[in-house]
Length: 264
Image 1 (cartoon, rainbow, N blue to C red):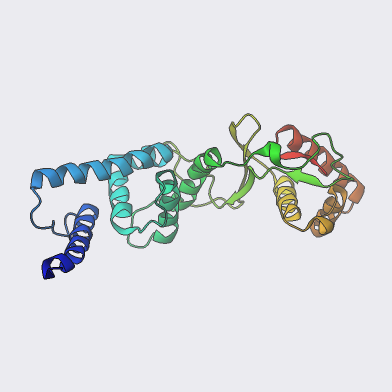
Image 2: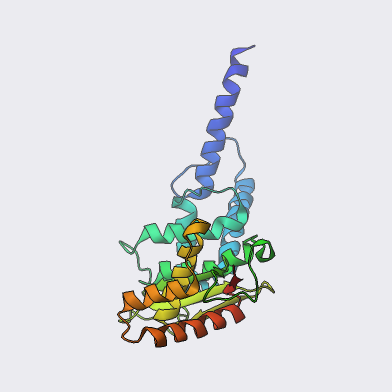
């Protein structure tokens, strides 16, 4: 084998590395030798526009809120600086969220709620992509939610935010967070429709308890009544019977919405 042949893989790797660096940051990374500028321009536009278009579809509120100049600057920064850990195009939105969570506000003019708003917008896409088959999860749709073990839907996510992310948009961009957190239930029902609903502290705590309970070994799982008793004690409820009655009604509502699939 000739010396040129043995050096070919190393040269190819160097060319590919230089080409990728140039596409990410044309202003700072020179183009590899021997590539026509016209062709480079086609690649620069094709790669950037593909990423930008996907993110604009995944994050329409952020796109509208920031406007053209700030939006493209943000996408350019993501494209230039973030090292994605997935080769899957549909997961690029999750990488964008992670980039914003680590980016912070230092030396940027990002809105203070930007990372939370991005996470809120990505939830819709993430639930739509989730391949969980609810019919394959053991449960009785009409099971007893108090004396049986309630089965929460893995596609029902209780989420807490510092900012009122469900209200933020071009017409409402707060600079300081409210005193109370924003608690949301985001779920995909049996028809595969995704819903967002603001919930109170009891519903949030109950949903968290249901998911924690479902993660336990079957022998250690609590009934709905036992979960409500524990919640009543932690909340310092002075009337446990009334608390359990309210919780039972809430469990029924969650079953109607498909946030609870049934019971075991």
